[in-house]
Image: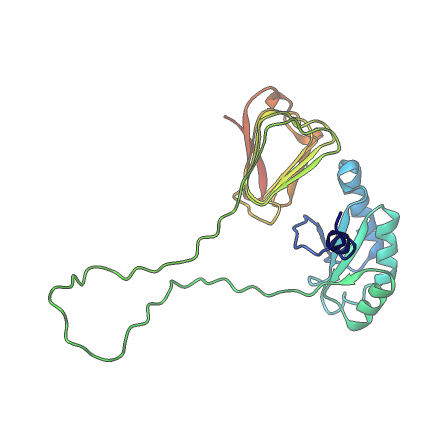
Length: 257
């Protein structure tokens, strides 16, 4: 090996930063009574213990009223950790609460306000009056070119084994079975052309139009845009049948195909 090659290997960086996307649930509080919060959390954990165990969590205080905002952050964080949650960030609250959270090893997350463009694109015309060209068809409307964002779908041809976790920014298409203990997540739709025995979460970034399709529904948990049902709540007569799952008025609907 040449000296230059050795120097190149020696100077190679040991790390790099890359942007990534993770599905982290937010705990949106509407009460400052920690005993009540703990009781409700315990009820939800009992419904799907494996789903919530060791789950990262963002604490959202933005829904609390002025009278409720004085919630004891230190006690809240410790309570969540006792329930096997991992609080990683906090939104909202006061500077004092932020300092307590930082001292407890929980980061402060800023909220980015995104404004949706609800108006039609405006065509800006020249204010200088010119003679009309009789050869121009005035019925033709201006063409507005917008940027097209390409989102890649992901196709999996191998079985998804227990303990595996797959994520897609678009649709997730699986041509084999999803085993119990596996987890598949997509920002778009999920298609499973075999048995679905693990957990399937579609529309994880809030897309309520996302759907789940599968040839055999035996899932431990299904979720669309945060609305979920566990295995005990799924209709038993839907097993061994091709079904689609979608949201209708915030309720999960399971329909045979």
